[in-house]
Amino acid sequence: MKVDQLSILSSWIWLIVLTILSAFVGDVIGNQFLFIITVLFIVFLKGQQIVDVFMELGEAPTKWRWLLLSYVILLPLIIAIIYLL
Amino acid sequence: MPNELAPYGPLSDRQTGESYLLATQQYKKLPGDLAMWFFILAELTVFAVFFIGFAIAEQLNTDMFIDGKAKLHPMAGLINTLALITSSFFVALALKKIQQQLTKPTAIYLALAQVFAIVYIIVKIGEYQFLFDAGIDIETNTFFTLYFLITGFHLMHILLGMVILAYMTAQSLKRKYQQELSGFEAGACYWHMVDMLWIILFPLIYII
Image (cartoon, rainbow over all chains, first blue to last red; front, top):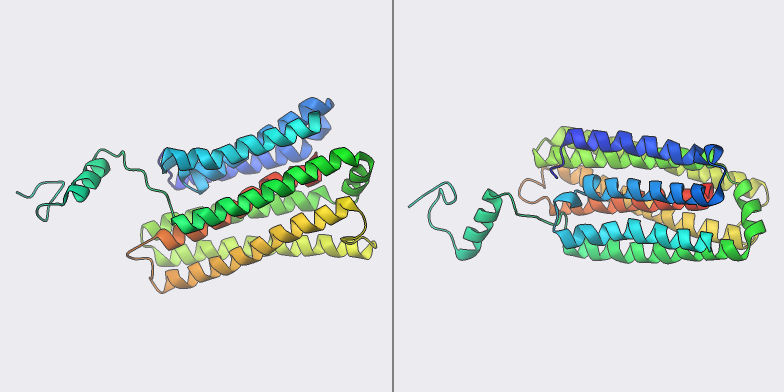
């Protein structure tokens, strides 16, 4: 995935939208389980943008990309498990 | 005989391989340098322990954490998130400009990145002051101990990141990145790491 100025701009807009969404999602979703899963899924989506676009690891060797992506996959997952146990 | 892969004469085996990969667009390079990546991984690990510890502590002290979070300002956290994301955005743009060897736009974007980092710092200090004025500090209870430790540690990373960004700005203006960009990339990746940590920290402490 080639990172250019347009993809950086798109990524920034997407990050802003996701951030605002995550701040107000609690007002929309009443179910605690669904709320936590949604918020932490948004964390993953935002993290993926930072890793692939801002850090440009989308163009990096696969193992490094997946090492950083695993952080924003596993950590929200672990936190979700702790909260939902 | 010179060709498109070796216009200046014969290449070594390594150069031939790299040229082939470049030509076939399969070459993937890790931005920055390995030392910075090991540092980034170490910091991510430390914060992972903090975040998991916070989540566990919350499950063990639910009422205390509900009370504690009620005393925070989610809007301040939201402003800080937007500020850091925007700061990272400008750092990413600065990298694109320095790749084109456009020194002034690079410096302008880095300066904008630092402006938004200053917004973050002002809001964070304001938050701390508000809590101190309410008689709340790091010793108040477990929630606030963790709150001040985690956000304070993150703030220290922001301050270090600003020093790095300032250094990158100065080096850009001196045209020190004409031959090699790995130093710039390393600094940029460090800043994006700090942003990524806040992206996890904000919902954990302010939202959930």
